[in-house]
Length: 461
Image 1: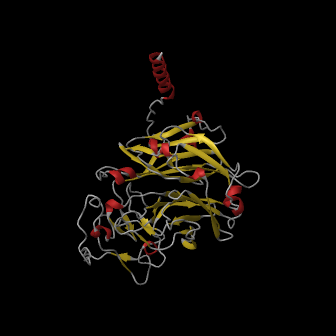
Image 2: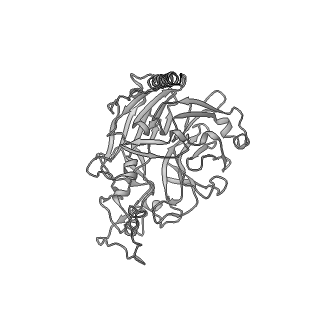
Image 3: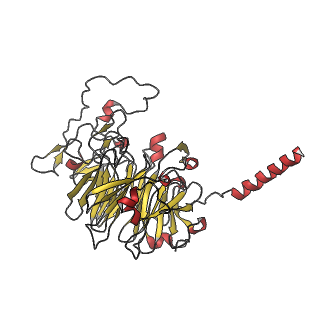
């Protein structure tokens, strides 16, 4: 009897293993995507002066212009006040003190965010290591025809210099709204290992794209908007506004590190933080295998994608934790009302839509407002995926637009512009963190495709 029972268990396990097995995804390539830019390593173009290799000394500013700079020929490392401590097994991989003091350390510059407005393509480079000249940058699509152009500081280098008053310190991703404004969260933190410091409070920063002028800086409140004095988790921002009512804008800030969501009202010029169990990671879905590297991440709520405006003026806000295969949703009526947003029990405000499938951990996603098609940057599969939100949320309604385990390693950002284009930044981040980038091959790419082309021959039509 004991042997019969064991046999039945073994047979059942075999059946389950077959029925639960997921066939290996067929790599569909990137044929639908146009590779707009590609870099082996990042360079800069500062007021027409190319910065092509690592250097210690920064540029000297013309006293009569914020945008006129020149580089001294002498480029000696700064003298240290004291010798750096001896390396240990725990610190041997950290940058040296000399490297942390560099104006430009080429290897450390990893592009993260991408955004498009008219002729400008915005690219962010977070200050996670030393030697980052500028965290907010742009390229001219008409002027920067080279395949690997130097990034131009936006709005200028002075605004990005840590020696300036209220500089742009550390920007991960941006968001362009319907009113021609560029929004971002500046965490205010220089994350350089061994030299980590809080330069200033985290803030929401808004630029007028037509004039390139700063129009708003709103400092977030410690212990209210961000907890444990830790603003490092503000990795994305989503803006809820219509062109007919530009003053009535709301920004949604995801806090992946401390599992919260901050809502900011531009009209009221104030913010509130909300919590929910859905903002946490899914513990069994935090294992990643990217570029042959295995690691665990615990990132919580990472991205918010807004659906089309409904008859009552609100939208569906789709969101997910990065360490998760699941998608959830809530109506913006809840987010925009501080009383509803901050209550301890949300009843049925939040909806668990379901699971996307194995290895579908996603950074950023967005919804095309005309068609309702969602696009998702799936880092777990090195893929760009789609789902038509007008169809039921189930695995058979998801499809792969692009997937490549060499040319699409870690899609870190995704934006849908007002010209019906999808832009994707791919940056090989896990290789930088857990191995070594091969600087003889392309490591960073910006891709583009139209929504129509992306959904063709998929179930997302």
